[in-house]
Length: 340
Ligand code: ADP
Image (cartoon, protein in one colour):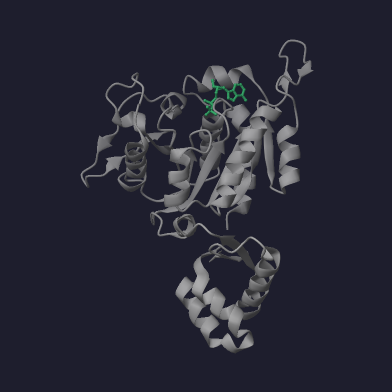
C-alpha cells in the first residue's frame, strides 16, 4: 500500500537508477490507487501523443515503477488531469460499511432490482449484515420489491433511520417523498445531493455489504457514485440478447475506467421452461452473457431463468425462497468467495 507522496519520496531516493525518466514520473504522477493485486498509477502525459511512442513510454514507466516499488504496477496515461484526479480523489468514508457493491446494467427492465433484492436475502441467509440502497433515484423500484410504501423516520441522532425489511436495512428516495406517484424531475446537482445524502445521512449501522441498486446506463447518477463512493466491486446484470449486452458492456467499461473491480456478470431471463409441458425456449436468447464474460475475462456469476413467479411475487414485495436458494444462493457464494 503506497500513498502518492510516499511514492514520490521513494522515487526521489532512487533517482540515480534512471534520472530523466524518474524525474518525469515524479513531475507527472497524478494519483495512485492500491488494489488487491497491484498498484495503479495515473500519469499525466499532457499534449504528448502525436508522433510519440506511447506504448514504449507506458512500458518504461511500468517497468521502472515495479522495479523500485517491488510490486505489480499498472499505468494509466491520461491528458485529462481533472478526470484522473476525481477517480482517486477523496471519496466518502463510510467506516461502518465494509463493502459497497454496485448492481448495474446497461438497460432498464433487465432485472437489476429483482436481483439486488434476492441477492440481499441470499447474503443475509449466509449470516452477513446486508443493506440495499436504491440508487435509481429517477425510477426507484426497491420499495415495490420490498413491499414497503411508507416513509423513513428521523432518528434521535438526526440521521435517517433505514427501513428494515426481512432483516435487510434499506433506503430509497421514495421513502422521503410524500407523493410517491409523481415523477421525480430533478437535474444533476439535486440528484447528486439526494444521492449522497442517502449514503451520508442514513444511520446504516454496521454492515458487511451494502448493495446499490444502480440506475440503468452510465448517466449522471452512476458517474456520481463511481466518483464519490469507494465501491468494492460492480456486478453487471444483462439479459442474453445482443442489444442488452452491448449496453451492459458499456456499463462494465465505465466501472473499469473508474478503477472499480468487476465482480462478474449475471444473465437474467435466461431460458424459459414451460411449466405445463417442460419445453425449453430461449425467448431472449441464451448464453450471451456467459460468452461476453469469457471474452472480457471477467467472472460469470450465473444465470437466472425467466420464471413467471419471479415477476408475480417480487412485484408484490415477496421473495420466493426456493428460487432464491436454487439460483441466487450460488451467486451469493461466488460473491462472498471474492471478498477478501
Ligand atoms: P430493472 O431493475 O433492471 O429495471 P426489474 O428488476 O425492475 O428490472 O425487473 C423488471 C421486471 O421483470 C419486473 O416486473 C420483474 O419482476 C421482472 N423480472 C425480473 N427478473 C425476472 C425473471 N428472471 N423472470 C421473470 N420476471 C423477471
